[in-house]
Length: 218
Image (tube, rainbow, N blue to C red; front, top):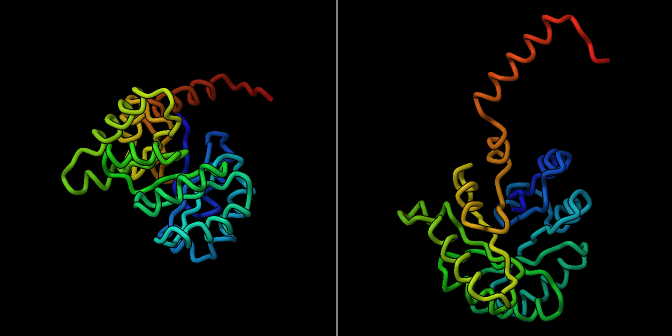
């Protein structure tokens, strides 16, 4: 499974990139707004840090304007992925862009039917939102399972399932068990993945025993 981080904060991205565990980045208008910076500057800086796919979302809702914005965004770097909403205009833009060899991330997916449409439109990634479905009393993980199963039935579908709106490590592990290709994860949740009380306890015991030997490796 590939790990993307879901943030527009460059310092967080740099820190995670240095671990060697980061495969890409996703952003959205809300994350850009939170950064307080201009989108072109943010995406350009992220692409300097990360070699993998960097999703930059169009702000337009109409087809022709989406393509105009995509033209600007895709000039930033070769690894920019154009992110479009799962609407009729978004899918039309996805089809046009993908036919031109552009990577496209279709976002705000909440049903398997929508995911099938995105695949038909040539999406590179489909982003089903787990947490937001959980918020309204539905099981977001069921959507991941359905999409993975449907895509597996058709070898010609190359769209990757990008599990989004991940709120906790359990979401990530369940998505991985179901076969999602990618997970985009908030920085705080990525850091939670390291933690386990037995790891901390074991390390403390090792360090205590080592100190008692009086040795030094260097």
